[in-house]
Amino acid sequence: MSVDAAYDEVMRITRREAKNFAYGIMVLPKEKRRAIAAIYAFAREVDDIADGDLPPEEKRERLEALRERLDDLVALSDARKRFGIPREPLDKLIDGGLQDLEQTRYATFDELRGYCEKVAGAVGVACVAVYGSDDVERANTLGIALQLINIMRDVQEDAELGRVYLPQDELQRYGVDELRHTPEFVELMRFQAQRARAHLAEGLRLLDSLDRRSALCVSTFAGLYSGQLDRMEANDFDVFDKSCRLSTRAKLGVVVRNLV
Image (cartoon, rainbow, N blue to C red):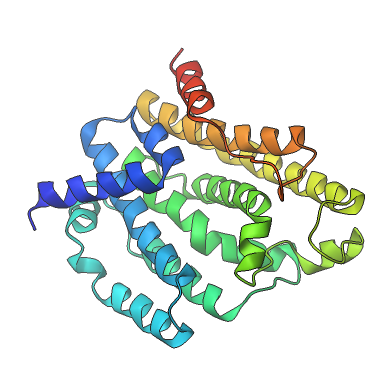
């Protein structure tokens, strides 16, 4: 496959599977836009394997096989050469997928944070090289913030996969015995929202080290996720019965506000 054809494919995957990423990267120059799409498509493949219906051992084999052919992924390899994307965060993404096969509960937030660094912070670290910054610490923090919002939004979906990412000690502290919309669950989620917003605020300090268009891209991502968090809060954190995802119109509104 040619490099251009490979980039066309990762762009199709991004537009189809990652509406938040697709809206954010539309403001980037072509080369950066394609490189971010290559990172996303790789992360998507890891997720699809880890969350798929195959037996755990076959998932593990496929993830390790993906690690072995990482250097052969045409679009991602070209992006790594162009922008100096390190291999370490890409390996971490695979480690996160493997962890999902082995661990379904997290005792404390510190334990959960380590997982979030693999599946989301690593994406931030990989992308920050494309943006042209070396502030990997805040890129990692921003990725964690977005993953925390995903965890809140996807409580039911994750539970159906047998996974509970909300820390077990916090579930116990707030008296949440089962995952359903109760006053105790709402209080727990308010606490989770405060933590996510704190990580988001710290992560967004990354913008100070970015050029204008890269900063616009990152602030668009953050605005879309922040909008989801606001939607959850407006729904009294009823993530079981009400949609907390932004409509296309709302997403375009975030993009327009950032452009203005």
